Length: 120
Length: 108
Image: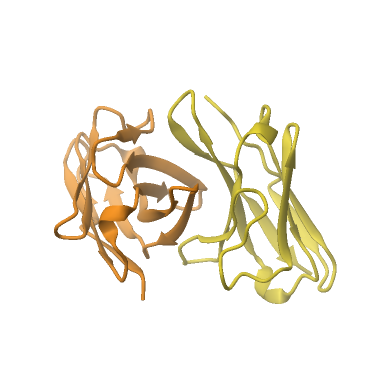
């Protein structure tokens, strides 16, 4: 079964840091582009960041640029995002999501999400 | 930045057809994807590249896209279709993915 499992969420103070991870299984992780998407409580989906299959290309939403860093370890089938200088508005459920493949950039596999709360 | 606008809510009786629009500047030139999200669950891809469906998604879900509006159509609506629906595109000039504002579908 193809699966993504996020971890690393929790409560952090404003200005603090947190590192989220996403463990992939059931597919060849190194062949797929990956993304982070977040959803603030009661709000819609917001794309956060993208990384290509080989890790050479990354993109960020303006709201997190300069504060978040996406990375991946294909040998460990793992995706990560390092979040620094966290703000209250970063409070959200964070999902990792796999892209369909070369023919489409839709997100076909999603994790269950991990909650990040930024509060003093 | 690129904005995708959806109606906040759509109500439909069981067995009828629900149409959810996604408005964006020249969206007809882009590949549009649609996601279904039920409370407390992760989103599920229901239509991608306007018209394709992942395996396991019923044929009742279909999409179209032209001009400034993309549409997700749910035929023969069932109670289990009650959920939030989001459209999504890749905006090449900003190198960003963009999600629509979301539509809550209520089955009467």
